[in-house]
Length: 177
Picture 1 (cartoon, rainbow, N blue to C red):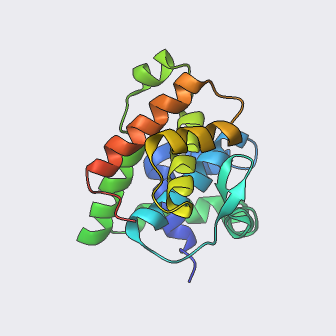
Picture 2 (picture 1 turned 90 degrees about the vertical axis):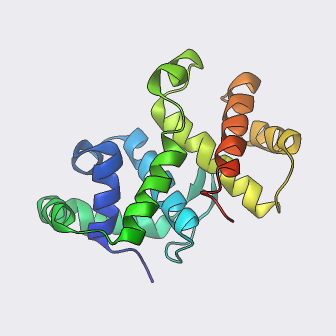
């Protein structure tokens, strides 16, 4: 079962604002963040849906890309309106809180000090989770090594920072798998 387009749009609007939908087809950074948001939404909520596999920028779903380009982008106004009208259950509200806790764990100033842009933070954080999950709960140093091999554009210091933040988030209990 795939997530409905209006729920996807609600997630995008909540995290990226209207530009996250209206500029989706024009901006790589937005497309990357949408992939990571939906991946982690499913992971944190333990919701089956889109299938994700490893790609250059971490977890990626071809099905999600097709949904966005074939369904959401052509009817953007309608999807924005339906997302605005969508009410969340208490469980849905808690899932949004956990997703915010995951991606908003550090502020923009801290990211700037680490020379990371928001989309890079999303990429490294979701990639950390993907590697952690698919390699059966590896230790910090091995996760740093694996992430470093896959993400050569980033410094060791940036990768260590993100991995440390990832383990800090895990310790909060919001990520159970």
